[in-house]
Length: 178
Image (cartoon, rainbow, N blue to C red; front, side, top):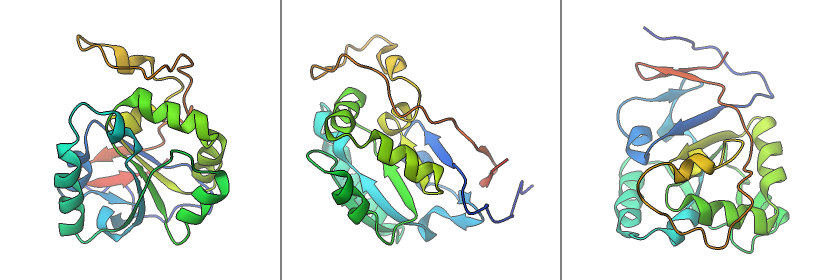
């Protein structure tokens, strides 16, 4: 059963947090009554620069193109708030891709983009976070270190992240926003 087809208010925080990109690309996932492929996405691939294996990026880029998703690929490193806002022009979604969570958060902190991202999401920009992108949406990324694998931290000591709160419930391919 579909949960909700209503249009979101003009300002709403909507987050889609997933363990991997396949969860976003497969099936008929709908956000605000629209399929993921119908959104114009700014795809942030910065976290992949810190990943041990970057081969998944080419596969994923091809899968996104195959789905017909309108996207621009951006890297947050050395980007100013003005640069970031310009890269989002005409986009209604920000997709933070998987990779190394510590690398991604370090880039967000170094660029000072945390406040900009939080403000844009609060103002209604859809935030899609997969793996590392999901972790940085949380208050901290300390859970990225839970598990047997020791991950490189790239000198990052402050683990405070974007501090968003999930505002969605996904069920049978439809996204409801309370």
